Image (cartoon, one colour):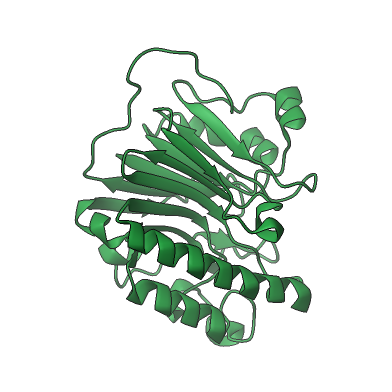
Length: 269
């Protein structure tokens, strides 16, 4: 089974840069997108967001042109879960979970606190809400893959200029401690399981020449429950083309492919 995650920094923008052509060549079972930033009427008007053989599901923010997550799947889910049950978080379109049997795949977009103290405070609140949800998930015995832009670089190896960023959102001590607690429990960082010492990044600022000079951060993850760790076979970050300020992150699992049970209409939900 292959899963790809990407913060597309606007689905219309990334589509214009060829992301759907590239995704269509990757033979993924599931594609998770974040920061889609387009409501249904905008997607319908623009077009070009379909994937052959895949259904598309969107969870939009109430605020126009903001946030939003999506899932593309080869097989229609048995169930969709929209949000975590916290209105302030769910109104921003940041959690969409698809379930097949005992497997869940989540497209998650955690808020950034880089715009100031108010949003950093909201980010800390979100981490508390998520911790409660993740503890519940740990107890239910399901298999989970949580894909998305976590907006936290966990360790110094995960960003180029770690010394100068220790007081900046995304690498603050409390954020990193939250990641420590998470990864000390039932959750695993799929990339670090396979590449414990590899310094690769998934996001680059649009300022200066960060992309050209590879001054980046690894803030995009596929976090997996520990009952999936032995199924990991490959993990890669794609940099050959630029579709966004983030790069696609692909993980392969030794699990049955999620192919369609029978032919049917492919569409949007």
